[in-house]
Amino acid sequence: MNRRAVTSPGMQPIPRATVSRLPRYLRFLDDLPEGQDTVASEEISAGTGVKAAQVRKDLSRLGTLGTRGLGYPARTLRALIARALGLEAELTLAIVGAGNLGSALANYPGFARRGFRLVAIYDVEEHRIGTRLGGVEVRHVDELRRLAGSGAVAIGIVATPEGAAQEAVDLLVEAGVGSILSFAPTVVAAPPDVAIRQVDLATELQILSHHLARRPAL
Amino acid sequence: MNRRAVTSPGMQPIPRATVSRLPRYLRFLDDLPEGQDTVASEEISAGTGVKAAQVRKDLSRLGTLGTRGLGYPARTLRALIARALGLEAELTLAIVGAGNLGSALANYPGFARRGFRLVAIYDVEEHRIGTRLGGVEVRHVDELRRLAGSGAVAIGIVATPEGAAQEAVDLLVEAGVGSILSFAPTVVAAPPDVAIRQVDLATELQILSHHLARRPAL
DNA sequence: TAGATTGTTAATCGATTAACAATC
DNA sequence: TAGATTGTTAATCGATTAACAATC
Figure 1: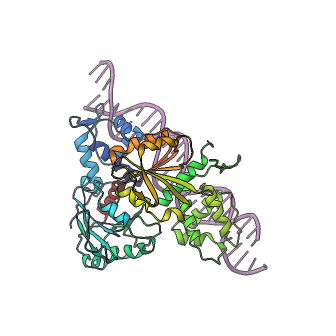
Figure 2: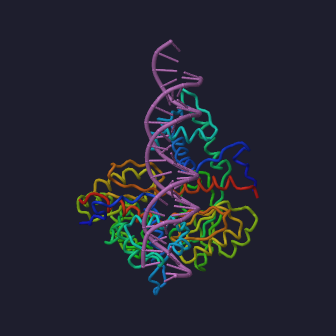
Figure 3: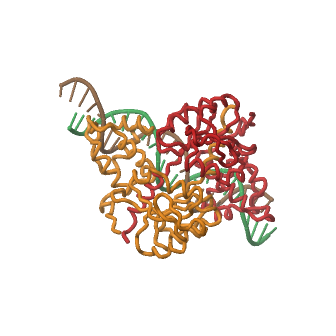
């Protein structure tokens, strides 16, 4: 699988904080009314909750050109953001873990709409193997090894119980998957060239709890 | 419901970045072997991936006292972190949306273990009302209003489709829920005194996509 | 005492914000 | 031209890191 480089030689890398906001801008642009072909930073700000100055700063890193006095060309801007995020081609996903969470993820309707395609689900439980989830047949994790070097999977999603998370990551890495999203509440180790992001329900709740505790008592 | 204030008058507020790491330290401490009653910042660092200097800086904001030459007393430290996160009392949760995601969340075994208790699930679909999920009966969202002022729910979780997210938030706010975790891929509005956190699958995947695109081609 | 490890300082880095000159 | 809005500068803020004196 060949991905075109997203950076030209002289181009500055996009700061992390900016990258994390690009998906929000993208969604806003997708929701823009058909006829509107120009959008101002103030509008983007209103629609995303990001300050207008921040929006302009972020967009300026895309090497984009808005028009002073007018705003940004909506279509072009959308394309530039998608390009910066590497979303030009459809990205393939594999889920490890076909339990409750894995099922919910497999049936998530937003995948296709945002340019992702689920291509495989793996589990270890015999009774789950062969069932279908989100249009894909559940296979045994052992088959994951067969992917090695195929480039068939761009992003791996770990939806296993806590105890199996590290093994799931190891298998994905072996299979050549370089980007992993983990829902398991554990720190997982991976080679430095593998990008891992973690979503942890308990952590989110605990952070909210902190806010709660600091609120004036009811 | 009376929550003791977590801050004493002279206490500095804990920076956001620190708060977001406290749950990780907490988990590490929970996983510590029984017998170990002292832990050094370097150990915490190894177990959580946070640099040791950062660990010490974070912990120093808890008003905690480690012992130079020795480390931190594990039990006390655990209690201090839990306290800073407002986790001393059990926190009650309500989920809005009993679809795939809501079901997965309701059945999440980690809730109880981390001191959260699911007390209610709401939906609008007639065929879901009355079914049981995670030990709780699914009720109609209209019943959410009855909670108003009761303080029965500390944290609300939005697991509805995109289109219903704002309404779910509004209902939770009306019901007096002051902390909300949303899984819907939309910007939702809420009064400033309501803490909202958002977990968005598509955003996470798109950020990973960016990393992918910047990798050297295979 | 000698060794270990904290707590804190100071330097650095990165992100946010306001303001405004440039310019459509 | 007059009005609008970008792109960029400079100021500010907050977070990270290394280093080390304090001290068990």
